Length: 293
View 1 (cartoon, rainbow, N blue to C red):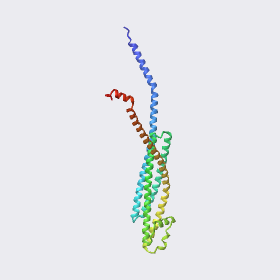
View 2: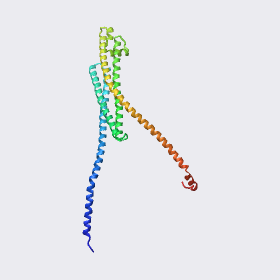
View 3: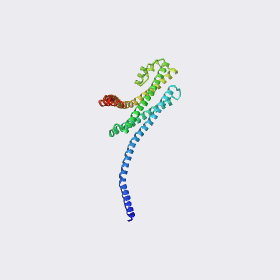
View 4: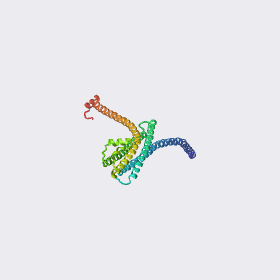
């Protein structure tokens, strides 16, 4: 008998070398595919990270804005009830108002950038893409939250205006002169309080009341200036809300169309079941084989 062990070992070595060579040839392609897949995943994660990072920054600024608005409300209440340190409270309220305006401008700029990013993503990808939906939902939610925060700030400023007008009315009553809101508005528009010149007597009480009225009048003028400055931001918010309104209308129309399609599909399914039961072959089988179902 011939010994074939040596030939078997040679064949085994050749097979192992060929298998090793094929693995080396295939590894660059598989590695390239893996790197390409990882690159795609990382690219998507980068866009999502940018969206969430911007949204997180806007939420942080929004929290600070709400905190400043709450502090402004507190200062307005102290300004109404406190007797001492009026000038310090006034300075704090003015500084808070300017901080709120600056922060609101920064938030609006961030929202504009987020909205532009959402539109760019929608142009590059389909509107049903996950990244696009995340961006749009974040933009819609943050815009609504910004509008709510600015509405609270507007209420705080209007509350301060009512406080000042009430103090002016009370001090005018001390001087023996009743003022209506229309007269106070006219005094604010004219920029002076000469309407009290003819009724002021040289007494300590009336002079103090007049000083109080003049002080409140200056505060009202400053408050009106802040409200005018913030008016532009409210116009910009209105534009954002209008854009979101059209998007909500589109969503509502899509949902309504979906409901109609679902109801039509249900009717078609019921018709199919009815036709299936009345099929002639099914009736023939039931007559021939009554025991079969």
